[in-house]
Length: 314
Image 1 (cartoon, rainbow, N blue to C red):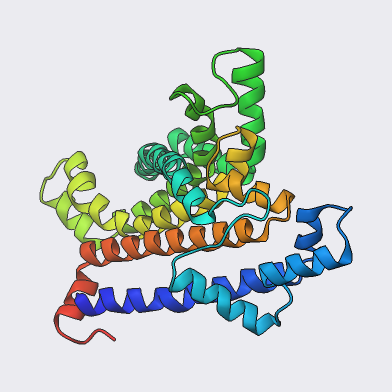
Image 2 (cartoon, rainbow, N blue to C red):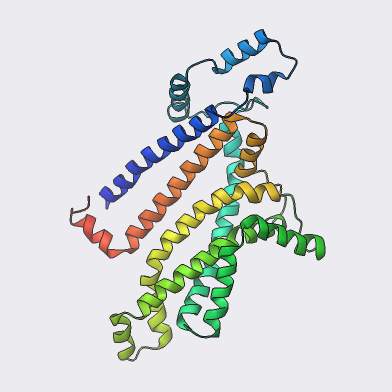
């Protein structure tokens, strides 16, 4: 099992390095002069040159890339914001609880609704419940997150006045953002659970369990569900990562000061350290989440445990 853990940890290294090189290259080629943006239009040529030298913008691409990677991976420093002068690392860490808390609530909502919805659809395959469940799932997959968020604001905030549309001071402020961000993931989990359950239900060992006289509830709960949920774990992990990306839109719409809204403010202000730091930070979080999911997958899948326990894992 430790070989599997080590293998997954090693795979994180090239992924994070690749994301770093990619986002740095993109921001390097973005039109605009950060020095001119900081000093304003009234700055002289000498002042601009001095500011570029101070920021290291006068260095070649490769030198700047290596310096940035050293700062991030050795000094654990994402630099300072061009606009505010504040540490990007401190800003990201201060905003992390809001973003992660919202993502955790979203994945909990999606899991608690999506999995029972998928099980119900599979058990009543071809019936009315199956049709209703899949219509809901199809709607969730089809509608963009930002559109769902706007519809929720129009209905529950503007029309009914039940819930606030902006802010982050109370639990009520997170209800609409969590529903909007979890709707698509709920639909994906419902579809995956239904597909997995249908495959498992048709297996020979399920037929044997029924032939032994077990009730349908015990067959589903004790035999079908544990095996059907193995691939669903991967979907849950990927959905968590998707929700991290979705916070960029959701936090902006609902004015929640998390990592997503921080990155959008960096994009709007051409604050390169903020944009690069936010992307790399989210990539690291996503890699850690997928690592945890892979470990859970290995823990519940006896084939993976047996493979690495016997020393044959590669």
